[in-house]
Length: 295
Length: 197
Image 1 (cartoon, rainbow over the protein chains, first blue to last red):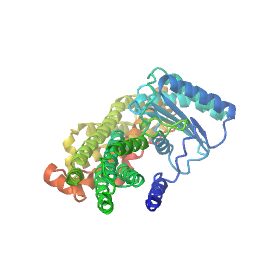
Image 2: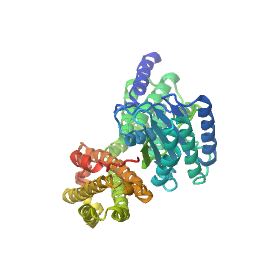
Image 3: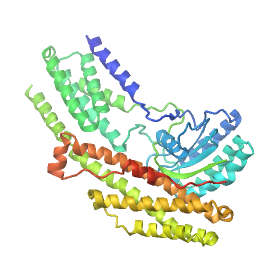
Image 4: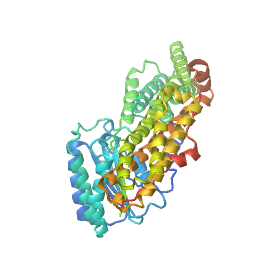
């Protein structure tokens, strides 16, 4: 019986995953595969590994997230626009302190940009970014030494922003959402609705189906926007209750133990960590600070 | 049985209250104001850079009087407009602000363009620094404007869509807010040509 419900649920999850990363622009933001994303394959592995290690040490100490992206071509997009898009998509820097920096290099156009997060604009000003580009990176690039320029530039950035922040305890809440607070709201509402659905359904239904109902309503609440999510979840709960209510009464009892079990299940689902051990942005934001240059 | 129904009805009522968008409208209204402040803030930053820039250019190209005065005048016009949150309720004032800033943008563009003719000016460290700062500020303005545009679009949708438009009109008395127009955006968002070599 529960299989009948499982198929639409799977389809739903699949569709959500399918439509989530919809990008409008021509030049896609590459996935954040590491602190150094070298799509043009110009950095020797040694250099890349060494720099990555330095960037990691720096982040562990200060919380600042610095990333490097080297692309073959901008494909007509402006370096400022693209850098901002990449930086905000990757969400470099910690949430709240916005201490991320992106060094973007486009080989074909011979353009580069240092994009600076809100929280570092005071230390790594537009002017200092321009100086790093002008004095550390461009001379080496002009000599054809791309790895040398990247290394010098990155180290100069690290030196500049060293000491602006102290690393905080790693954030326990890894939920990602467009607005910071609503992630929490999603969870609260989701748990509440799942809880309620569990209560209703557990009053006489088989455990499996009740759990499924709870999970379904929770997903609805999670994925729609807040007020809509709540209404939808409410209706779903009502609908489930009306459709399935006819068969209730088979089992007596308060179902309180089931209750706790469902709700804890709902909570576990929402709090699941998406941290796969690799590098990921901490939720920082960018307001267009930094500097561009060419060589 | 009765208790469960009561809970559900209570939930639905709460849900419909949330659905009227009262909180969302209030939140978006604040968001647009914050986004607007950021736009104004960045324009102000640009205005603050100008006296220094004009002074530096004067040192090398004092006889480019028209261009220099054009910038000074455009700046005076742009900073002369009193910026208030009420401006967002008044499309005419908003338009005026936009026009003044656009005027300053094009005056600055001309100033940077004439710098191309003065190799000594172009090589001046101070001038290069000011150029970098100006370029950075123009970029921040672009970002701030884009954020404002997005926020206002979101807000305006809520003000117009049913049923949240009822809440907006009857309870909160909120109106649509003016947004930057595309044609104007092209003129204003175009940073002055700045070359490093």
